[in-house]
Length: 180
Image 1 (cartoon, rainbow, N blue to C red):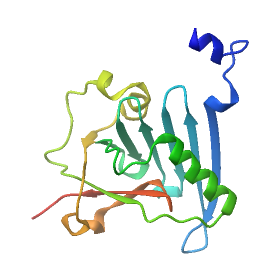
Image 2 (cartoon, one colour; image 1 turned 60 degrees about the vertical axis):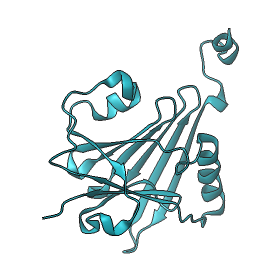
Image 3 (cartoon, rainbow, N blue to C red; image 1 turned 30 degrees about the horizontal axis):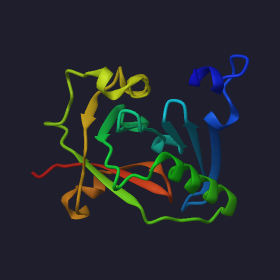
Image 4 (cartoon, helix red, strand yellow; image 1 turned 90 degrees about the vertical axis):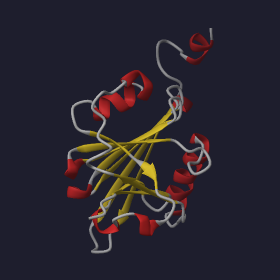
């Protein structure tokens, strides 16, 4: 019944699916395009950062409580169990991006450092049902690594990090945890 009320003539209602687009300058003067697509029906946010070799796609799947980032230059996916204390709710994330788009100068200090060990955190037997179909579509045919939030940035090898997430709102740095 709920689904029938939400759909009219087989189409989604406007408030179920929103797309935000932001173009920001980089330090060297070139542009970075960020696109965030919110699907309220699936309870997901998909963030695409278009920045050449530093491009990435990140999915916040609130239904399954996982975040997955695919860093295109690394041909790998990194998955993290969502910590609801550190990650804003979907409506709050939507408000952040709306404010940033409207003000064009909003900046947040929310930043998550994610570490993974390339030798120990490769997931070889993947339960896609656990992670959900949006993450499966993003990560199915490339290596998948389990990440964990690093409490202290000096616990990560910051020189080998890749940036993902929402730049300036909720940044995610994915770093190899190598201690040689």
